[in-house]
Amino acid sequence: MQKRITVIAIFLLLFFPQWIAAQEFTEGYRNAKWGMSFEKVKSCFKGYKFQNDDDGDIFIEDKIMDIDVQIYFFFFEDKLKEVRIVHCVQNPLFGTSQDIKGGISNFDNLFSALKGKYGGPDRLSKKVPEYFTAVEAIEYGETSFYSQWRTKESEIVLFLGKGKGMFSSVTLTVVYTSIHYKELAKKAAAKSKL
Image (cartoon, rainbow, N blue to C red):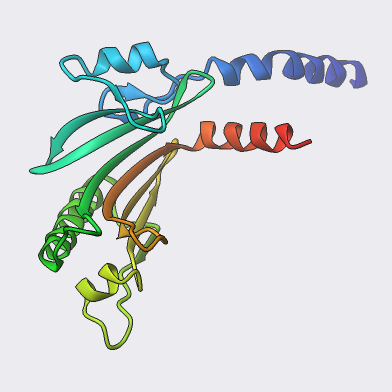
């Protein structure tokens, strides 16, 4: 009996890592699935022009629910691990509070669409501090709206808010993240610190 358990343990140690590496994912963003290479992701978005921003991040421009967005693709060891959909709601120098009202409306519309697809969120925050309207609180960085869903393979976050810097923009963002590749990236980062 002991010998049989040892053989099973050795088998699992030898073949379990290959099974994980060959894992097929059913989730991702649109037709691009977690773990796809950049070339495969690119083939899922034919007709789109892939660009690099100033930081070298890869994105395409698109329109979602009549909102102009940039869709960023992030990879871990040439495997798709995250997609960020970003809409700049208010430029810090030229924006108006009307832009933020539209951003709140867009947040609510996207929230409804995501709720329809994934059900009620695991987390939701739309708290507005006392003495502020929602527009003022977001414009001054006093609050942000946030919701999060978790599926078998993905974490989805919807966010409306302002960065920490004085000249930060107010952005509306949807982030799709592979749970599997997020953990692998976290482990690799911890290992590199050793």
